[in-house]
Image (cartoon, rainbow, N blue to C red; front, side, top):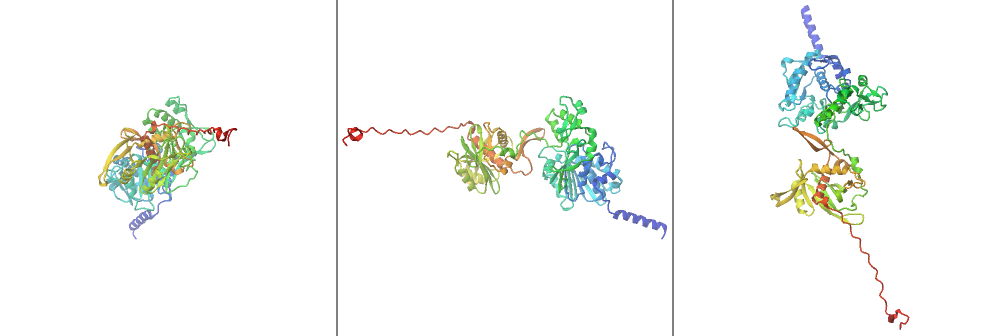
Length: 606
């Protein structure tokens, strides 16, 4: 065989061998340390990637190749390398496990900018990626590689989330996504739909700096199967702990620049001073753990960090930023979100189920407390059941839940609201007014309230604040022959404020809010299922009540809102307890004086 033919044959075999040879068995961090090159235009430290610079990213990146993990949630601040972590995962896919991928950013402009200035340069700089990249066949929003394509999408564009199947989904800064993609549904849901073709080996990565508790990344964090934080050892005592802002010690009387140079960290275990020079070694020795100390990964694994871990941030920088940010709520919100990686909330009061159970009145279930003026009820109507509460009211709007529960029919609601409830002295009480939610099954609620108008009224919660606590309107249901039905619009936010403020009063203070002895945990959890937070709408901020966690049941809270409205509607604020008059004592009558002739005297003739 001629030498030239042999050479071509050898080249073909070499190329075929390269194609057929399986990829090296590497983790994402190992691959990045060996092949990733950072661009001087977008990186403060250009050149060869080194995970040792940000050791906390190793566990997050390596979770991507763990077969137990399907979804990674990275709750992050700024300045910790979160975006580069995502980029390393994408690069790993291109080089090691080619399959269709989608990378989604908050909008198309950011998607195009990132593709041009970060992703495409990343592919060109690394020989391992460049050999697979096909720039001639690529567009800014669709990169082509050997064996795969990568769609670069904007969450605001339904067209960029077209129906192409993907195995790998990467979502960056999800809290900045619009709630819907044009006329379509939530863009995250649309993107997830594209992974259905790969039910057993898909991977989803979402990361963001949090905003509010109801934001996407915080909700994803709450829903994770396991929540991991990065524990680092104290250089003095070896105790593993997470970096917390409260452990940064500084003189608050100093200006920001002086604080920047004098602040230090204090070990929560031995109280020794930890300096910035200690941090690199602490980070290298750290590990991801959950609150129980376990390092186990699960199907949905959450990773949470704050900016204190960043190798580019000193303890004094965090303290100085806090002092500077205290000037306005907007700046403080940025500090909480972007530095502490916590959701922003302006909750007036933190309520939990334990607080409810502490409000034990000392009365058994069903027993009306002493000095009660009236009873009211509240009913939350659901598809297949009714939640109800009955509350006793006294002076200063002091109140106690005497009964609550779940029934299945309107007849049972009628029964529970019409039986008598007794005080310890035997005095009988009946529910004076019951407010019934008409939000779910309006027609049946109106019919029931018309038939029981002497004690029941229909109500509907208002989504916005009302000029007054409630507003009466009249409605007609001609098809049912009902006219002039009373419907009260109720400001739920006002009455939730009322309940929360009364709940924290000391037990000996007038106007308290109580429950009966042995109150169940489910009721307590539902009554405290919401909290008050600040939400931005355009340029304005509003305080609103929102569920603490996704899909949290709050039915008993709604019933208590309606019961409080009913008491207000009856004028309980202005009522005073009337002491019962003491029963008159019967005066014993003296026997009439007998006439002596009947036999009462010595001279009787008998």
